Length: 601
Image (cartoon, rainbow, N blue to C red; front, side):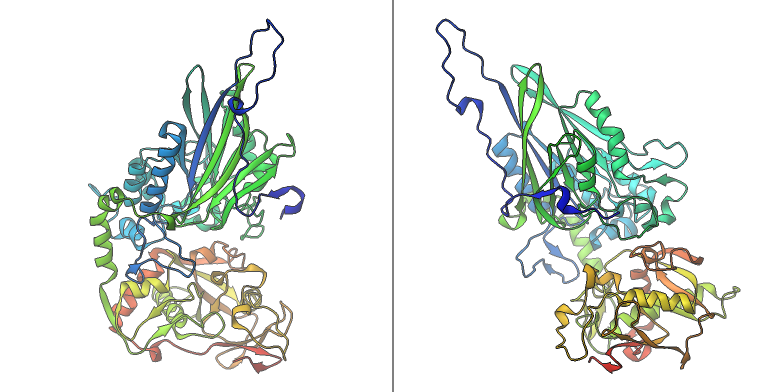
């Protein structure tokens, strides 16, 4: 159930800076009566917790798809090599013995670097390499990391091998064995910090991951692992950590703070529930937030039981930011108490790469650069995604054509071979381009940036119609006489581009002057009005097939076939086999935007 943020969220100042807490030594001493022994000042301790999240394989400030240094309009920099420099600065300022370094998940998927060491030169092979992310994070000195949902994209064997290569625990209190219901990964991590003249400060880190794994990576986890809700598991584990003597409880959660879900009601748990955890579970001091790829310097959520604020911070993604929590403790009445917590984010673009990290992984980086620059074909003209989200673009038709061909081949000789095959694809990128001339793996990878695999589902015409209506909600309702601004035409309801689908093999209009749910017009198959009862084989990526985006019917539809080879690889194979990438072999105009029947473009 979406939460009402106004009821309990209190944002900090725009700067994200914490409130300064004066130490006891700095305060004026109270005048004691003559002959009264002076009171000893209270013992204090300052702990600094640093955090990253959603690194997605970014070690270097390098764009493998452009074969160049990473750059964007905001001037961001990326990569663990930059994070390492920031971490070293904080450790030097605060004292390494007073710091903790955490991550909130999504580490081993997202760049050609991580793909290469999962599939091309896999870490699971006998005598295989150590994963570059493991090497980098070990060298930087992480203390613990939470599981992200993308950790499961390459299967449990790859994840377990990665876990084995780490010198720190991979936490997941709500990743449980399907049979025993016991944690399949360490739920928590505890570290003691020495304080002269006082007992050590005991800090517990609880790791929580995303329930959506059960949907998005169903093929790998079904019957093996289950992922109950973050709130219920935090409510179970936090009291245990306090009973074990934890003075500070930090949660590393691969879950956003918005209280929303992208998978509808397919599981009874909230996808982005970090703020709900803070609100509902007492005795949490701070939460390192992940998954949503947003920047939150500091967000204070009031716990409804204690009335105390819980501080949340999310450091964007791709190692572009580092969250820093400053925890102030005081020792009184024989125990340590958290007096205050504040947080901020540091920007990776303010520092240079740590040469220790770049030198460590120079060879791995070079191998991947060579791999992605392999030539696999030649394009007769430039293909681009610049207008793909509002115009039927040939470059997206390439994806659907490859998917159709793969599924037709897979179903040949089966009872479903005679059914028509249609396919979906999304405009993942607004900047991808396959230039005229030589085509490389890098060019094709930039077109399909996710490691999705292909599934064949059985759908009816009526279900396809409903699917298209849902997809068409992506467009902002626009009056027939209104000026069309393409920058404001899409993402209605904050729906991301990857949750807008083309569907090949049909012809249809999307009337954006109409209300959502009544936009699909002139829907035909082979020139005739679509028969609601006709059956189709729907070639769809595994994210969508498992419910990602909450599109209707597809998740519950009968599965006819699936595979573990990435769609990106299938595209490269198709282009390699053809040798020439010519739009006449795959492009077609299947849909267009209209307003009251008049084309928008």
